[in-house]
Image 1 (cartoon, one colour):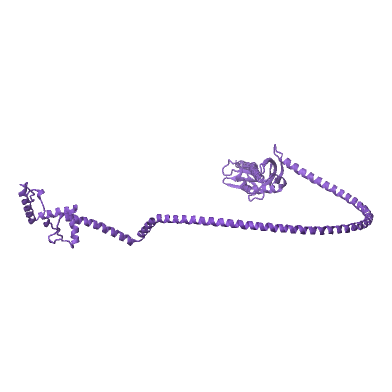
Image 2: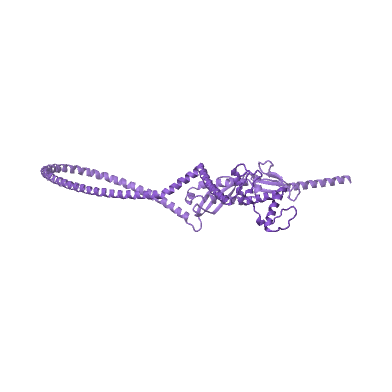
Length: 475
């Protein structure tokens, strides 16, 4: 039984090893040289490929296996192209046209590219949108003529426009983008017209060159013919000059004779005209002197008359002006005299505090004199004798005047009431009231301790008994 068990175990082990080897072979992956596999296992992401640190071999365990399961993103590291065919664009003036643009890129940072996209198709789709936006933006900044003439410049502008954006996807351009073709959009003939213009320009240059060549040939022929004609004419001229010299000599002799005759005639006419001109000039000078003398006389007469009239008018105007100014000054002085006096007085009063105090004192004295006079008249009519114990008669008189006010009456009643409270005063008041009662009849009963007032109407005070204090000093 033991040998059988060992054999069985060996067989099972061999089967297991074979199964493991088969599974390893089935799930083993070798990355090709132009591709990178981005392997995500758990929380780690490792790129596999030629020249990378992790190598180019890994095991693609199914993602459903815990801990060892992986997800793979395959991205090419070789160059790939993006081509815009019949892409509609506009120039600076909104002229429509279609372009054919070719661009070549490669993935520079595979890890960053794997973070941005799930596969190469998604990457190409997003990069195509970037390229389209850059092409449209660059072409819209220039005119169609410049775009057609400077294609290389716009290819460089396309590349510069997308380069910074491609870094966000871990991609870089392999070479400069190229503007392969530019054609009219549907319904547009702008590019066709520009091409026709260029064609006509080339044709014009060609015809101009042909015409220039023909002109040079004809000119050469003309120059040759001219040489022949000039030599022929020189021969004829030599003969003619000889003949002309002979005719000239004869003509000169005839002309000189005729000129001498005409010279003599001219001198005779000039001398006659000189005499005539002297006579006319003299007569004109005499006539001019007459007119100047007459004009000067008229001028002086007119000036004397005008000066006389002007002097008279000026004197008359000066008289009227002087009279008006005198009347206006007098009237102004009469109207301003009281105003100026008030202004000066008001200014003096307003600025001189001492003068203001002086005026107030004068007015106060006037009021005090009036009041004092009226009070003296009242006292004289009342025939009142005042005995005051004040410091001086003035103060006593001032207090005596209180008799004619509510304050004086109140003080007098208070004095009588205080005098009645003393035994002597009570007796004197009772005696006074008793004497008055004999003349007026019985008085009503009074309460104990109060003075009896039999007839208040008969209560009189002798003017000689009015006192202000016990001192008895007469005012």
